[in-house]
Image (cartoon, rainbow, N blue to C red; front, side, top):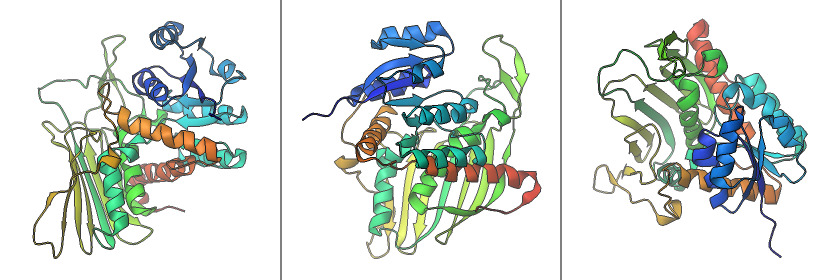
Length: 361
């Protein structure tokens, strides 16, 4: 007997329309409702994708009986209340990153999800990007021996002079900034490869406080960071470092490096997100060659989706989400993973305020 299609409601139609809605449809789910603050945007998404139900109030959407799960693609300040309401309504939840505004919200969200037994995951889809997934498998196989350190560098910026940053963004208190927005993805990658972080020391920086408000064309000031850097010790032993800036003129992109007792793994990327055709480089003692490309096996790149390079990883995440619902579990990245990631984010800001090394409980 064929299982009934998963029926999903999407809250948010920015990234929701670009990746979440097409991703769920492509994996056999039925997107039966869409919700946005502005009705015209929700109606456009519904028309574009043939979605039957339109809402401007997510609470009304959650009252739908013929709804199994919600995908929350709203601004970060709304993640807590929407996730908690969805779980209370008995819906499985996929929540975008950054997961919460602080670790206390995140802990309550994770504990609530655990009590309900519902499937609750965070949209750290890049765990399933081919290059990152292959690096994880190589670490598991012992390619680098005992893992000693992980180092992540991310530097992107303008290639032409300009006086204002062309995005408004949220304030730091609203979950805005490069650390929350992109750093959360990279912290999740670090945890996926190396396990939990034990201690953190670092900071987040505002290199250019000017933002351009697209609604008014006026320059506004923000305290949301555009750069961050930290070092960390790992619970399993070893250490890690991460440095990033979105205001690095002609920055080359990102480089993720893993070092162990027997060798190293590198995965470079030209932009802020891991490409679906990412390269993985490696070198081991005794192999007689230096750093060289390790072709990514087809199992980590099972299909090509030309619509958006992020869709491959997101669709693989959706497969895990659906499998989790079928098995009654929350696969990683779960709400617990979101909580542990949020602890690191909080620790960086706390360290910057003068707390020095911050120990994670």
